[in-house]
Structures are given as C-alpha cells and as structure tokens.
Image (cartoon, rainbow, N blue to C red; front, side, top):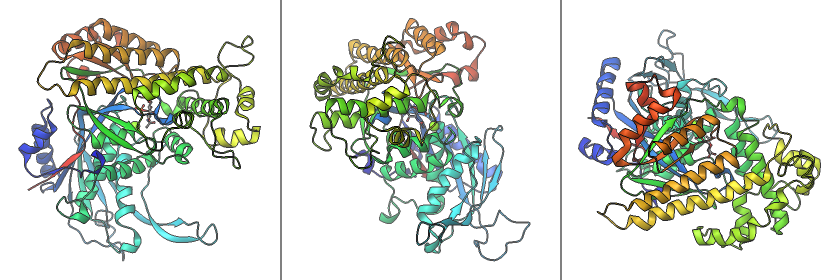
Length: 573
Ligand code: NG1
Ligand code: MG
C-alpha cells in the first residue's frame, strides 16, 4: 500500500533530483535556498522539506459524496529549509525580555524568499485547554497555543498549522520534552489561490520541517519512521486549523465525520503520496485509500488560471456549502425512495452520502472496490429513481428545483430534525434547491472517474510504445463531459471558465475542464506533448486576460505540468 511507505529522505542529491523526475530545475532551487539560508541565518540548513501542489484531473465535487477523485501532484512545490537555533531551551523561568521569544522553547523565525511575505517571529505557548472531564469546564490538561486567525489569510498561518500537529503529537505536556527553537526559510512555485492547493503543500512541508528539526524523522530508526499515510492524517488535521473559508472546511468535515473522519484529505494525500508519471486514485469509502495510477505517456496537463477569483469565504453560502447540503439531502431522499436502510432510526441524524446509498442499494460487501461495471449496473437501478428528487409542483417553479418545505417533506424528517441535521452546522442560502441536477452530476462524474482510471490502467502495461492517440482522445472526452456536467448540472463553472475551456479545445487540447471548487479559479487541459508550446501561445492570444502578460507573469497563470512525486526531504551535510 502506497500509504504505508515511509516518507523518502535523501542524502544523495543526485538520487533526490532523479526521483523528482521533472523538468523544473530543482537542483538550482534547492541549492539557492540552502545558500540563502546560510546568508540569513549564519549556518547551513539541517533539513529541506518539499511538498508539491496538486491538480485534480477529474472527479469534481464528489469527494463529499464519498466517491473517489483523481488528482496528481504537480512539479511546482514548496521548499522549506530549516535548522535548530542554539539557545537555552526552557519554557520555565523567565527568559531575558530582550531575547524573548527567540530563545523560548520552540520559538520560530520564518522568512520567505519572496519579499511579499515578510519575516515572522512567533513562539507557541502552553495554554490550559478546556476538558470534558469531570465538570464540563474542568481544566485538566495543558495544550499548545499558536495564534491562528482563520478569517485573516496570513502566509505564516500555514506554517503554524503544520507546527501545531507536531507539538500536539510529539510534545504533549506529559512528555516533559521541549521543541527546539528553529529558523525556517520558505520558497515556493505553487501559485497561491489558483486551485493548485498551495495551502496543502505549505502545511505538508511545514509539518515535515518541524518533525525533522526536532529529530522526529529518521528512516533508519523504527520509532522515528513516518509513513505517508501518517503524514497525510497529520497534515489534514493541521490544515483544518487554518480553514480558508472562514470555517467552511471544518463544517464540511464535521458533517461527514459521523461517516468517516477522512475528508477532505484529497489535497494532502495528493501532495504526500503521489509518484512521478502517475495520478492518484483516491477513495474515501469505506476508508481513505490511494492508488497511484500511471498516466499514458505523451499526456501533458496544462493548468490555466481563469483569473476569476472565487472567494470561498464570501460565496460559500450560495456555492460550495449549498452544494454540500443539496448533495447530502438528496442522498437521504434517494435512500428513502429506494428503500435503502438508514442507520438512524432513533436519532435521525445520519447524513448518508450518495456513495453509501449506492453501496447499500447494491448490497455491496463492506470494503469492496467499485469497478466501472459494478457502478454501471448499480446506476441502472438508481438513475430511474432520481425523479423523486424533483419538485412535485414542477409547473410552479421550474422543472427541478425544490423549496425548503418540499425538501423537508421529501426527507421524512420533521422541520426541527431537518434543521438540526442539515442546516445547523453550515450556512446556506437558496430559494430552490437543485437536488436532481446535483445528483445526476455526482453519479455521472463518479462513473467518469472510474472510466478515466480504467482507460489509464488498460494502456499502462504497454511499455515503450507511443500511446495510441485514441487513448488520449478518450481521456479528453471524459474531461469535456465532466466540464459540461459542471456547467449544466452542478453549476460550479462560470462564463470565463466556459470560455477558457472552449479556447483550450480550439488551441488543440483533447479535453479541458474546471479543476477544484470552481466558480472561477483554474482549468486543466489535456494536451499532446508535441503541441504544448503552440497550445500555450494560442491560449495566450485568445484568452483576453492573458493578452498583456509575458514571461514569468504568463508562466504563473498558464503552465504545463506532468505528474510529479509527492513530499520528501533531505538532510543537509
Ligand atoms: P479546491 O477548490 O481545490 O480547494 C474544493 C475542496 C475539495 C473538493 C473540490 C471540488 C477544500 C479544501 N477542497 O477544492 O475537497 O470538494 O472543491 O471537487 O474545500
Ligand atoms: Mg486549499
């Protein structure tokens, strides 16, 4: 299992660069970072951690329905160089005010090669935490405290988030151990806010850096080995502390935790587990699993940013969060109409997902992997029942939308139960809820992911041969179908994304679609290797917002990527 392998740690640089196996000039970047570290902090870095961004190739908005997605790590990554700072390590006593917090236990000085991210200094403090022991307000344990304000996006928050988990897991008050003071230097090529999950890359890299610098990471010591799966879980937990959508991610996660505590781990898993040349088929049900799946040779994925910013914190009510509610409520109603058993006869609080409805409907064995054939067969019985998600008063207000009252009726819950289960933890705003369209998207997209993966698997045995163009065409078609579904059924695209994907096809892409949450952000296009440069040149000419961009500025918004390796690091000498 890929998740059980340990995080690669390199001491041999050639081996490291070979394993990264990408076209970016990594050697130069790693070297430059190490030299800058010496310049700024007066000693060599002890360790450099690397974590890549990721792009979702297909499988949009189905992770919270617990269907699998198909992301790949990109070459663009975050590097963090670090070294312990020698200082008196003590959080007792009273450190000289002039030195504080530099010498406080676990204090952090962090700089970024990019001048727009200013130097930061912070130190964790021991704070009493509220316990649930005897008496609900009893303070029974001490925890760590680092100031992170999820409403305010600050670059160092991601670093703090990574640190938090390391403190909690490795330095519980009972251990009597103290984290070392540390200097960090960050550099990154994952454009922020462009749908490539720079956030997950930052959190994964900083988690690794804090582990390494505190001597908690060593491949040759069984107790200090860290598996990829363990890092995913830690990074995931860490990233929740810095939710960019003002609490959206924890809410989504909380909604699903009754079923699995593993969402949304897509980003972190892709950043950690990926292999060069392969995408990662990530499934969340019945538990997190990730299988690297080789992609056909000659397939290059080009990411292009629409330059439309969708601020999740502002729009979640009518976009992301609303889709989560439409999807979960739809699943409950579908379960009822299919006669699928809910497990909440007493509480009425189960948020069953479409994936579970399908599994229970098909009488699936626990833990079985879904194949194209199984899903196709199960869908025969399901799709014909989707009409139950449509309005019973269709003529009054469009064919598919249902009002909140209709939705409550169809769910079989009382208004209070419904509100408690579906609306109390998340803010949404809508007059008509499009349960039917969303369900059609979810099931068809789930099938496309499996077909995409199967197409890749079917050709992956034939080494050395050029991939027949039909294979790439088939993958492209699935991506185009996904885009159509995102536009028409899930309504998570926007005019600019629709336009950019159309221009991409005209410029020679075999397939093009929105990637990530949508309503703006990035597209991903499948482009045959031979025409990548002319493809980029044509899109630059035709997509209005790119007209005046040249050089690095253009390279930030449209660039080719081949699937890269996941997180790793190297100890300095
Ligand atoms: P992006 O926009 O890439 O962060 C979001 C969710 C994913 C998934 C996609 C839609 C977060 C952190 N990620 O991705 O889990 O639901 O939208 O497929 O919210
Ligand atoms: Mg993110």
